Amino acid sequence: MERSDVFAIIRYRRSVREYDPRPIEDWKLDLILESARLAPSSTNSQPWRIIVVKDAALKTTLSDATPASINRHPWFEKAPVILVLCTVKSGTQKFAQFLGKNYQLVDMGIVGEHIVLTAAELGLGTCWVGWVHKSHIKKVLSIPTNWEVACIIPVGYPKGESIPREKVYEKFSTVAPRQLEGEAGIGNTPANKRRSIDEIIFHEKVKK
Ligand SMILES: Cc1cc2nc3c(=O)[nH]c(=O)nc-3n(C[C@H](O)[C@H](O)[C@H](O)COP(=O)(O)O)c2cc1C
Image 1: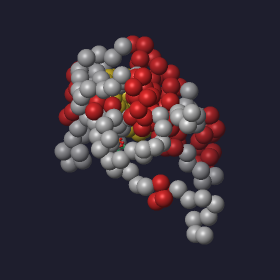
Image 2: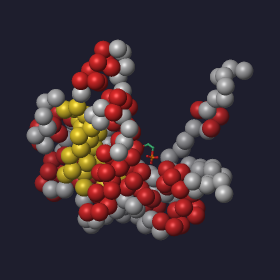
Image 3: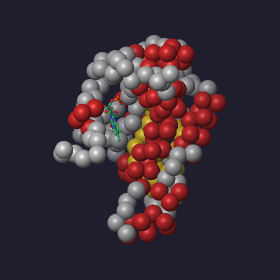
């Protein structure tokens, strides 16, 4: 059968911006955090540090860390958990950077994607939030000066209705028909438009 369960979750994931405030089960959070721990990284440097924020007052303060001048996100404080992804430079990374290879943000992208995909598989919505006031977050969460905030990811049940897990695999695990703009994913969230395969994939040479 030409199908993939991992692909089904990739296709089903969306950026969720409306959350049901009910708490998420501890075992689900454990799986999400363990999927982060297992992410690959350049020279196995594992430069991520993740802060799990559940406290309501802290979440509101985090929400205030997205000033109107950037792009305020009052919605994400409704999520029961907010993960703050930080990066810390290791010795090997400093050396790699010296050689002109800076993979630190690549590593952070991979760990974040492990988080959002595992969450989606467990019926949980997430959203990468990069437009944040990083220095404010550092202060509020007592983050050490040599760590840098990479992004924050709220995690929670979407407000909109999701489809049962077995149906997700049934519906989304094949390429055809290709996803079109608006396809309903987790939390009944419509898909954003994607570039066509021909625009982004090249075989052998870019110009024939
Ligand atoms: C690094 C990164 C930063 C992002 N920052 C924000 C953000 O600050 N606010 C927001 O609402 N969405 C943010 N997004 C979500 C994107 O807007 C979203 O992934 C994109 O529109 C595609 O939609 P989809 O995730 O539903 O497929 C960010 C995504 C990434 C990968």
